[in-house]
Length: 144
Image (cartoon, rainbow, N blue to C red; front, side, top):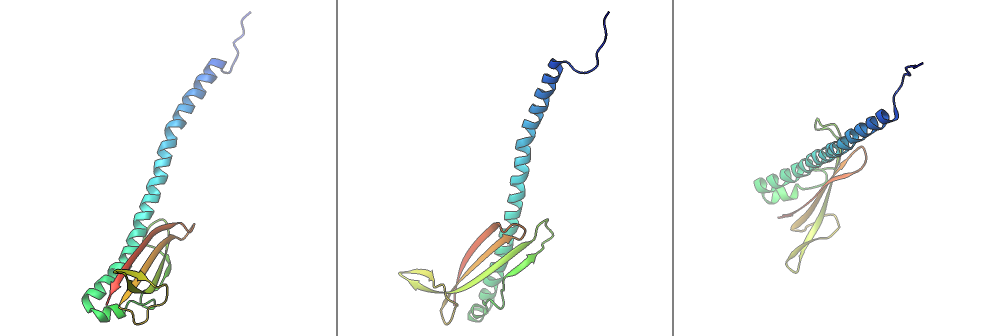
């Protein structure tokens, strides 16, 4: 007397596991590339935010000369938190302005607040607000 049993045989189960494993193995690189492209997009957005403030400074110095140079201050270009540019993340932009001087033919940042120097160092750092990851570090020198 032959009874039909329900369920799967061991061979069918092994074949199923192999097929599912191959499918997951194919999805892992795809997921990894999605994560990389997300970081890339956020890095480009961070670079844009850093360049934006530096370009404003360059335009002001180019337009107003020494008056524009004198306007490059922390009061006019403050650090900002929670910048939302319509992306899925928010950014913090830190602007640091230091005095600079010429040493041996090269401009060297003094690390102190600018006073009557004829050069200024500007550092702009853009950070992802959610996890503190640095997305862009830019540095520029301005001459009077």
